[in-house]
Length: 187
Image 1 (cartoon, helix red, strand yellow):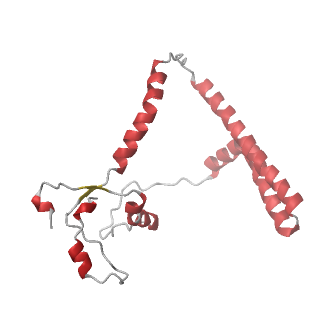
Image 2 (cartoon, rainbow, N blue to C red):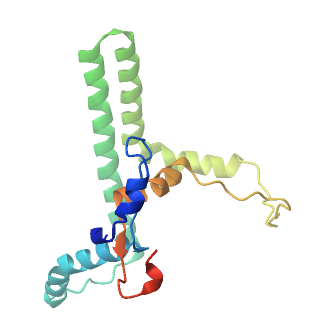
Image 3 (cartoon, one colour):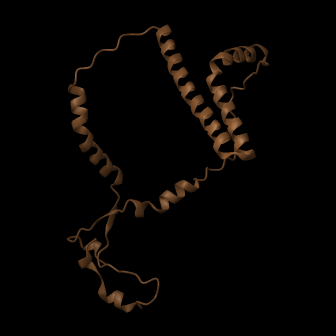
């Protein structure tokens, strides 16, 4: 802001001991918030050298894989993830049983160990369960016609969105542009 444009006469006219004391400017500033543009420029400047070097680096072409190879890699990754997640749950369950003690530690520990065992053994029983569900599950007819409600109320914004909108000028302060040569901007 241009602090030379303060209207001291108007500020002296109001009592300064009131809590709603207002600073009055002689100029009428135009506000523009350049947050997304500023972030994009800074991120572009920081990442540009790395992107340039990455594109100049020769890459080995990836061979085409068959469906069987893709499925084998997917099963291996899934096994690794399940063993890690199950191991973490089992170890946390044992920690709860050993160190926390009491009834709640025992119950929490048993639940976590059960979850860990289910995660680790899912590949053995999940396909059979899926086949059983497909065979015995009643056939469901899906209604594909979309019903459009007549009096649909507009969605209300969430509390998080409201809070972000309210505090946006505090988190990302606006940039004030003042054209001192234009007489329309002056009060």
